[in-house]
Length: 435
Image (cartoon, rainbow, N blue to C red; front, top):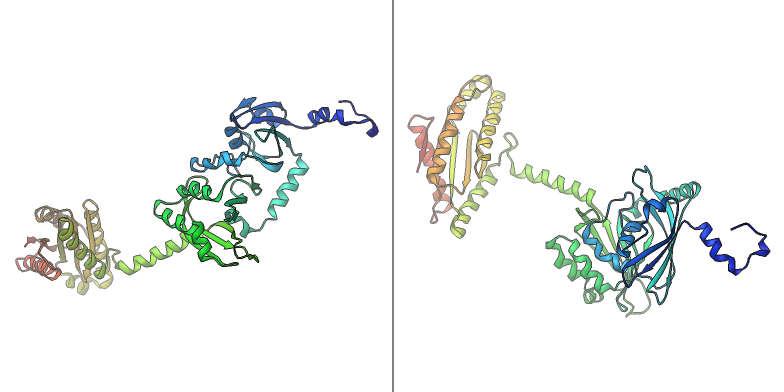
């Protein structure tokens, strides 16, 4: 359209002015889940198809992870249809990731509902470089702590509504969504680990919230939730009742905070201390207390579930001579290497290895009868006899084996095991005895 003097423009010029200046115009029929593109230029020529389903258009325009064009995991697609419903004019910035582009383009999207809100008119404009820089700088001003919140929304229990939904992984903007709170609970529950779902439903139940939250009260709990990429991460779910003057005004703010990195560090530290509590520091096999616990567990498994199990006790022959002749440092090295051979043997069987004390070790062999363990013990004895230990050369071991019986007490089983091992020693060492 040719430029005119300001006073010469009139209302009839608006269609031509709009068509000349906007980058893309799309008409949507939400009832038939379809759209048709009336105009597209610039980036929209490649990005928007001439026609297609409205569902796919929503996914393409803003239902992707904010910093990439990676699609949101399928579980979250249940929210797409409610996101695409508009009862009034709606505008937001969106990021468009064209294939091969190093950085996203930023566009302004405005939606106009028409024809009883069943049709929508989408107007899309790419922002110029200066506007993009301004957008990026504005985004940088958002505080780090705010970015830890993956999701937030406002809830009105009395009206059963949600509003001001914000999913930071999709966009910094508030997401348009027409969805009831009661529906939202049932749609999102599958995003949690199965064992956490009952707790989520209980703690988000409207009656629970009304009963347990006075105005101004905030409560939270931690659980595992699937993020937009489909990976389970640790999150903190936070509910806070708004401070209002009306007792029956049940309005809440709900937020999901990403605490995965911190939680993983804590879990790693706990795992480390747990291992210190149950592992022998020299050989890294189970310590006396833990292998005793595993022996108790094996007895319980046999007596309650008929899960067979057998036990080995192993003692290095004449180990005192190693310490006296070569020193305790060499003795410690020998014990560590010996424990390594034991762990290799246990790895090929369903077995648990522990240091009973000094040069004595106990192996709990799950799912094996006495004769099977006897054969395993004999192979192990030969492996130790053939092994070349640094400095000391060859060393042997004596082994006792017993199969656990349903009528055994712990003391009875261990006494039989102890006697079997000492019988091997008494009969000349470097042999296996089963009792």
